[in-house]
Image: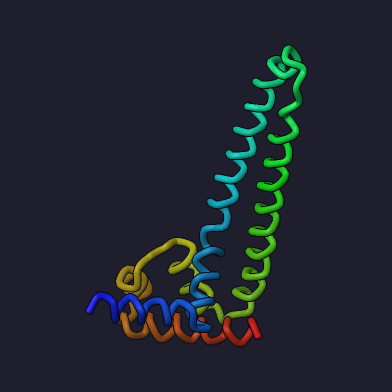
Length: 142
């Protein structure tokens, strides 16, 4: 039974709607992801400074590795922000009710029951509005 459910979930995740859900989850967490990456860069640059005296004494230059890694992480941050901007544009094109539902679900991370209670609607209506938003986003994606 567990194997069948696992296969179903994998298949669902690869569906067009599953892909949009994955992008929305990533979009909702983009700022947190970028903050963690920025902290990684700060840590690398601190290590670079700490190693500067040792490098000078040893006659080695390992700092380039730290800088290269920091550049790679910065490129990843830029990619995340670019994708977030694209999703921002798509979500901005949704009707206000759908925008709010997407925000509550994917940015705030609220469950359907909580959203339904906050919006004074049934859980089924909450599912329908969010499903309509996902359909609209799938059309925008192409």
